[in-house]
Length: 368
Image 1 (spheres, rainbow, N blue to C red):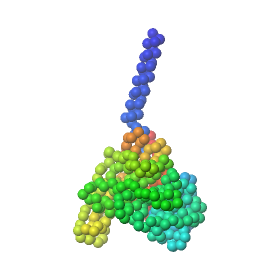
Image 2: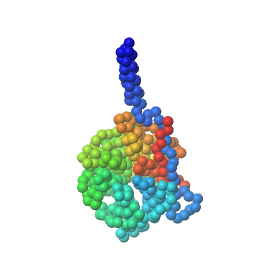
Image 3: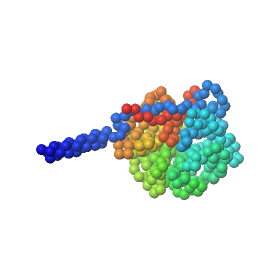
C-alpha cells in the first residue's frame, strides 16, 4: 500500500512538472505581462531658464554606465552633459576647425573608458574627450570609404563599429580598432522590394537604420526601411547569426509614389518623406520608424517601433525572448511624438521639439 502511494505521488509530481513546463512554453516570459514606457527624467523644460539647462536643437542622446546623459546640441555644436537628476554638469567643445572643435556632430558614442567619441563628418575626423570633457585626441575619418556616417557604437574589445553607406560596395558596418585604424567592413542592406532596390539603397544613405552591440560582441540591427526583422551578427566572425522576425507585424514597411517631374514644395499629405532620384521624385510614407534597440537584463531584445497610420501613430515594442518567441506590445498612441527616439544603456530617450526643445528619458516597465 505504501509502495502504491509512493508510485502515485511520483506520477503526480511528474504530471505537475509536465503541465507546468507546458504552460511556460505556451506562455513565454513576458507574455502574460503588459508593458509601458515610464517617464523617469525630463531635461530642457525648466522653470528657471539657466543657459546651461536650455536645449536649442538637440540631435543625439546617450547615457553611460554611471547614468549621466550626453546630449549633442547642433545649434551650438557642443555636447551638454547632465547627471541622473537632470542637473547640468559640463558643456564640451564649440564650433570650429581647431583641435577638439566641431563643424558637425554627425554621431557619437561612449567607449569602455567612459570617454566621449564624436564623429565629425565635415572635419573628417573622430574626436575623443575624457569623461570630464577634456580634449584628448583626433583621428582621421577615411572620407573615401563612407557616405555620411549615421551611427557609431563601441565593441567589447574597445573597438568601434560605424554604420554608414559605402561609396562603392554594399557593406554597412565598418570596424575600427581602439586607435581608429580601419580593419574591415561587413553586413549588407536588406532589400525588401527587389524591383525597387535602387530606392532602398539610396534611402540607406539618409537613414541606414539603428543598431547596438551587447557585452558579448553581438550586433543587433534594424534597417531604416524596417521590414519587421532584427538582424543579428557575431562581430568576431562577421557572421549573420540569425534573424528575429515579429510575425504579427506588417511585412510591407513603406509605400511610395513616383513622379518623373520635380515638384517643389511639401509632399502630398499622406507621405512623410520626399527624396529626389536621378530619374524623378519619390514620395514615401514610412509605416514603421525604429526607435532603437536595447538588450534587457534577462537577455530579451527590446525594439521600440513607431507605426504610422495616416495622421495617427502607435508606439509599441517588439520583444524577442531568449527562448525564441517573439511578441509585440502596444505602448502608447498619438500622445507621444512619432520621431527622434534614441536607445542607450537600457533606456529610451525622446527628443521632443514640439514646443520647448527637451529630452525625455523613459524605461520599459513590466506591469502584471
